[in-house]
Image 1 (cartoon, rainbow, N blue to C red):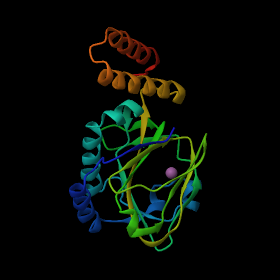
Image 2 (tube, rainbow, N blue to C red):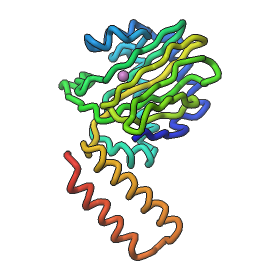
Image 3 (cartoon, rainbow, N blue to C red):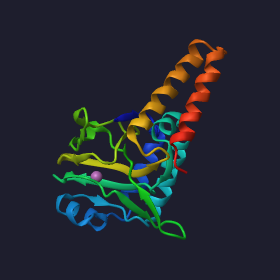
Length: 228
Ligand code: NI
């Protein structure tokens, strides 16, 4: 399932991010790629321990913490600290699959994060660059994603994907992975659909007695399927 989450960051936040990122310590993206993906990866990235990446990454997570849609769809258990990349001058990232496990070394201990879900938060205005589409091979076919600055796409961590060459301008984005409380994508989707139906019914028929039962069913399924 691909899900777009609009307006994670507003225009003022985007402007502040761009100002901080323009003077940051960009490095070759191959430094953080696995052996195979290094062959396909042509971009720049902020190192994982870069202070600007840590600060802005924290702000992205704060913004997502205020998004019920993100929580409902991802049911996050662990989120790898967000990273930042940029593409210009024909740079691209050819078709690849992300590593299944990433080791989060930002805390006192190295913590494995299973990459159930991937996310890309677009930081550049799509009018400012050509190319740079995120192309994802989903179960429902190939999806081409290029979103407004501040919008985020959530997609399955196990999908083959690529970023097409940026032939004009510059494309800057934030990206990260997360381990979900619910590992199985089918079970996660079922919970998401049920939650959406409950939210719609809460608006359409507030106070209806069946809402209590449905909400109970949601939590009982989550209790059954979640790994904590
Ligand atoms: Ni990737």
